[in-house]
Amino acid sequence: QVQLQQWGAGLLKPSETLSLTCAVSGGSLTGYYWSWIRQPPGKGLEWIGGINHDGYTNYNPSFTTQVTISIDTSKTQFFLNLTSVTAADTAMYYCGRGRRIAARPGHFDDCGQGTLVIVSS
Amino acid sequence: IQMTQSPSSVSASIGERVTITCRASQGINIWLAWYQQKPGKAPKLLIYGASNLQSGVPSRFSGSGAGTDFTLTISSLQPEDVATYFCQQANSFPITFGQGTRLEIK
Image (tube, rainbow over all chains, first blue to last red; front, side, top):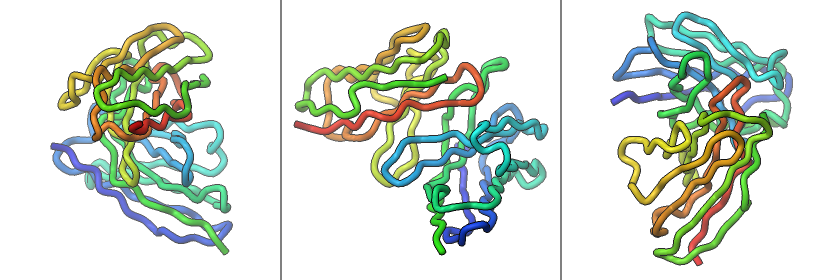
């Protein structure tokens, strides 16, 4: 049974960089699509971007200037960096395992527990 | 691709049939997923490929539709189904979600 365990700093000041790690246990990174999703308080879900095991990334155009997603297959971990955060980046951040279907992005069959990130001066 | 769910909230009685709809702004074939999210928890996959039930999900949940119009149905509402439900288009990047439907017990 795969498990996704995530962590990172929960309180940031404006202009700082958000950095989160998602560790995958009980399964391989190969053959899946690894994504970051966020949810502002009381709001809906927003896909930030994702990465294949070989490092190929896709980003939501809303985040392209801010975001970098990377992967370390030797540690079975993947990472989110979001630069120059503002209060609008306050949200619960989830990592997720995706099942791609051919070239389509597919659905998420497993998620981490979530990390609440608050941006405040 | 914009995903629009309706209603935004629904209240139903135990045992009642509940239907939530999701409309895509362009055709997505059958590439739609449904998730259930309970307060303080991560989203949980219910349905993928518009109508495929994820392993372990109760059979009272079902999905249908293709193209632009999709439906999630709960055949007999149970107390543990109180949650917010989201649809997600799985057809093309960027991945997008509906705004959510909050389900409550009447």
